[in-house]
Length: 117
Image (cartoon, rainbow, N blue to C red; front, side, top):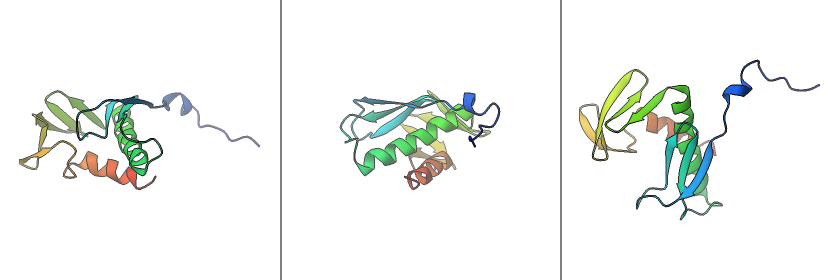
């Protein structure tokens, strides 16, 4: 017996492209948009760091695709909350935190995705 795909599900699942490129110093990977992530070309593809980075950024890309999170030049939206963003920092809980901080709920969810690798 063949496995059946739920009606409408397959057309909504899009593959996420991985681009291997030069990123700013200290940046391992980043979600570019809902369908692409970038990983530093300096990270070996067979390393645990690579696997965790792909899982982390893929989680962000999937949340962007679903509309759960969105990013702009000077803002980040998580659900129905919008946070100010400038100079590599995001204001959350009344304080400015460096982008990628574990203080942000979207980062905690992505970090959790790393543990499933």
